[in-house]
Length: 305
Image (cartoon, rainbow, N blue to C red):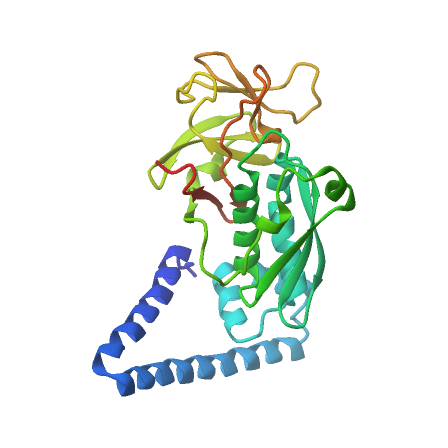
């Protein structure tokens, strides 16, 4: 049985929204009838899906492995979520979302802890660590975490972040009070998440250059972790044509240093692209999410050209 590409069913959802909006041209009654029709169809199929899961459970085949497979399929999980049938509760989904971005947060020298999910849908988090060498981390961290949580639990109403005690005393690199806003409020950062299929095939130690939404970027993999940056050396301001990923001299296994082929500057990819040769220089990191099925890169307006 063939699997419908995710882009196709996402476009289908967008088309439904467009058709409902277009029905408004026929007046209020026409729009209300369109919305009622969609609601009745959704309820009908929701009841069928619920009964289907009940039957599978009654026959003893709805085990943890099947539940994980249902939750891991974007299309199936989205449909189940619409009907309140997702196999994992909100807290579990939020924790899994945070787990997916922890490698990226770690590349900024930070981490994040889930404290609670309240009854009214607010997610409370604690920001850990620091983000040395990356002045743009407030934007990149927000985009990475917010994008992951929103995709996994769209019913979340807000995200509240507090700093660790030691960071409050010394003054955090990232201003926590500006890190998050209401999840469903007006967007304050113009950005978009874009699928970049070629990054899935990047081998450890390899460097690839690509373009996403008109932005030139460079990606590399060290160990199992992927990283992406704007394709511009901070020292010579030239693209990373011919760049290589090497192990830092005397560094631990898994360390990754991106070397510019032009000026020979070296950048620590795990520390958000901090330059090892000139104090104060750093690359512009791009938020990256890898869910096992593909890789997406977020292009914020601050790096778009």
